[in-house]
Image (tube, rainbow, N blue to C red; front, side, top):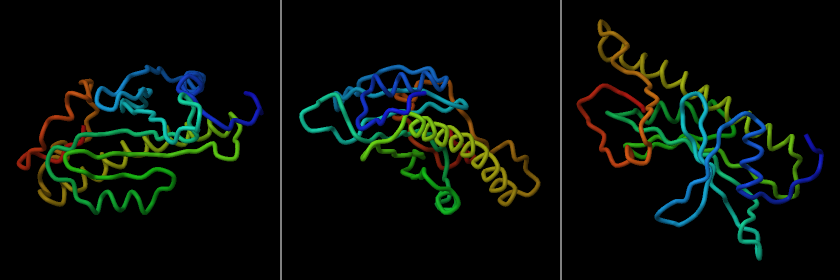
Length: 182
């Protein structure tokens, strides 16, 4: 990896960096905002790489980026579960906006960073997504056990869909189904 200082990002440079880290990456365009972004995935969870603040005079360059994974929640998810995650983890935050649960991490190249620093940010993201999957499975199982001590914990599970996340965003959470996050 190069020790050159990176002071701006492009979708192409981020795509190359993600691919060097072993990710499959595709470039998409938001149909509403007409903005290009990247999509990838880890541990069965799809995530978007959204450009942040543009650099003046350089339409394709930006100084920061947001990594965002959106999961669909079916049923009610206690806010305490989200708050506990946020209180015990650094770098990325969970946000519950029913029927969605979003994990996001921002990083910036303001002042200049090395390619190794950007790679480390991607590794942190990957680690946090893996932790989130485990955390939700355990917490939802505990929640199921607390509500129905004799019920199987399998009724509440983290599901990672192979479906189109864009189409699934239109589904509405149902209140009478077990706690499930897709």
